[in-house]
Image (cartoon, rainbow, N blue to C red):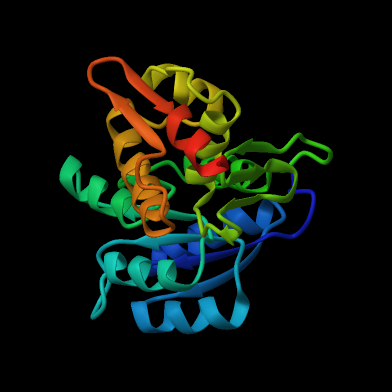
Length: 236
């Protein structure tokens, strides 16, 4: 099924055979595409085309995919799926900690990549009209507008971070296990419990930079919750 609108996918891949095949699969599904073969070209196209999602290979000539992702994240929260030939979990976690929304390990099924694009875009665009806002002290999360604020300042979050914060803010004080939090926030994702920590680490860092570093509490061996005490103090 074609997407409801012509979302644009930026494909960053130096292997011509892979990039051409991805381009063909995505166009067949109704997506518009831009293709870059190296990091500098990718950043130029990203700024010019403002894609809805990026498929980003890690091993690129010159500037690698991690550096490209880091530069993208300085300016935008556009969803990014990493494409990597590396099977080492550490490399995958590096991408997630830099702000990637998902990753696919080569060799991969092209149909799987298209399915991941659809899933990440659904998470990114899942902003139901009329959805209630959640307020906890100075934290305000508005799913209907895709907006989260702390103390009146908007937080720049990835789609995954926004979904996690929404789930926690909807039930302040409730303890979520890792599996419960994934099910509540990311039901269509195949995210691993171990990689959830990377997304939460990034979310905590952004909250800390906004002055809310103690808002998310880890209960060792049990799970995570939104700190009601910190929320109450924020409201005072």
